[in-house]
Image (cartoon, rainbow, N blue to C red; front, side, top):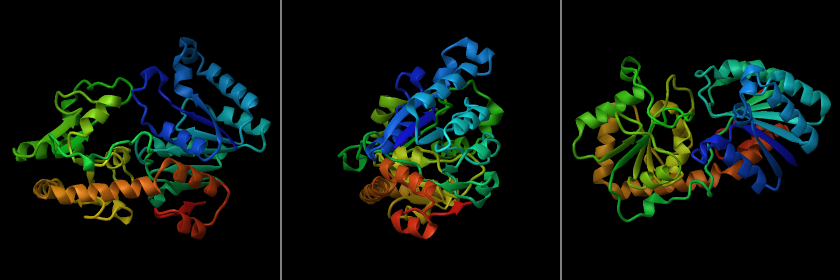
Length: 355
């Protein structure tokens, strides 16, 4: 099958975002035997000031030309917010057999995600999103939407931190401050003081002196990316998976794949309900509030061997059941209309498809 994958591949960032989902998804389709052509809509858009002036008219033409030349069986959109609905309509009119799906890794109730998906729904055969709450069904229009887990890729999440003999730190967390600039944003003190994630970090750093925290993108410490991220994460053996609010079922950032996929034992907020997949105390550790988190960090610092065992179990499960080949196969199975009963027997995360 020929797959045209339209997403933000971040060429202008010179490899700083090499772990993004778009690369993992393209890898998955390729390793499953499909031909994949990557089209970076945002890079195309930013290649000329003219695109900003004419509402990305040239980007639409480029995608239409690629579609004509490549003649894909499947178009996969990863956010792809520079592509107009009229372009998708034209492509479908000119290629009546092509199917179009879209994946999205944003919280359904943040960043206008619901509105974006709803506005595009008439041109999409199926949506896949890293949120499992039933509210995601609000965007469908004679198509379907389904949860998919954050993806791990053995060629990207390469580390087995639980096997390292020494760790100079204990707990790792990295705030991104946005992929665009890659540096600390100008401080908005009021906004930062009410950021639940920052409040948790403040609580932890203020309360305990014997825990060695390695927090990046926090206070005056710059965010870390790419190879530096890979170098710093292995200093620790525990990691924090803190989410933006509001919290929706199974909605986790890609930190879960970056951290556990590289072999950290991860702490996850209990209201994510992700314990349906990663078992509490065996493959991950869950907490209800910052005080409980603090106590559990102290416990696993004392019981490091147990922490490393949990890290190993979580790493094994994610790489076995949430890797790039399995998730991209899931996309195709859903698109081909496989029933939930059959999908539940093939895949190891809770399956529900809203149609």
